[in-house]
Length: 120
Length: 120
DNA sequence: GTCATCTGCAACCAAACGTTGCAGAAAGTG
DNA sequence: CACTTTCTGCAACGTTTGGTTGCAGATGAC
Image (cartoon, rainbow over all chains, first blue to last red):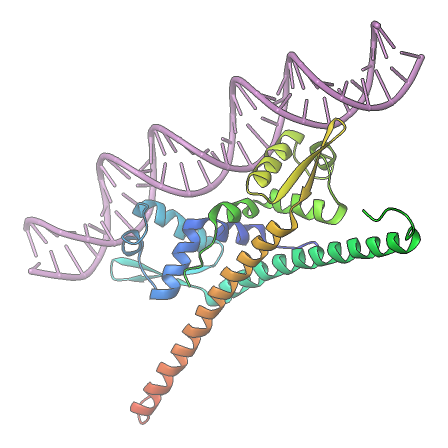
């Protein structure tokens, strides 16, 4: 009911650069910070910090490959994040529906009780 | 395909305090900055700034009521935000499914080509 | 062995979130 | 009308966060 979301996980996917990062790794498979820096308009260090954030909340996992550090998405954790998005979305959606229904109900009640009055 | 989200709208709902603000106004109807400050652990000024941000992206609209400023949610814009959440979520969800299917397909192909080899 | 490249750390800048403090304006009360 | 209350808005300040540059260390490639 209270949208019980994990604020850490949400703020991790709240950043646009981190979302693009997840998109890239999702579509092209695991990659290193240097490899990813060539595909986003930010420096390698910024990417590394974002990957550290994503790693801290478990959205990616890192594996040393030679002298590179390969980052891949954690599918289970990303699925959890997706579920939270859907949760908040559906919560708001439900409230919007309830408000609309309540407004219509009030309108109908007003129509029946004062049906001979002004209807503007 | 490219998750084409509006970064302004997303970052507006990315802040936890702003999400709680939207929750409160959604559940209890339009309210003023002072009224809301009693229900969140932040000062009135912080609330006012957040409401300004939400107003800038059109998620709330303000109406002067006496000496107060009443903020109410813009249902159409919030519905748009909900749609974006669902959009990103389903995009990632689809990619997760595709990855899983690809992995299973590769596994199956490996099984048929080297079916007499080790199967660990 | 040397060179290239990938990593990590530190310092620094700018924007965002939050605070305190204060002045102005509008409603309520004597 | 005068006084008080309370709600608003603005300004200054501190802290966190996203981003940069610069540099030193480590590891694979030649």
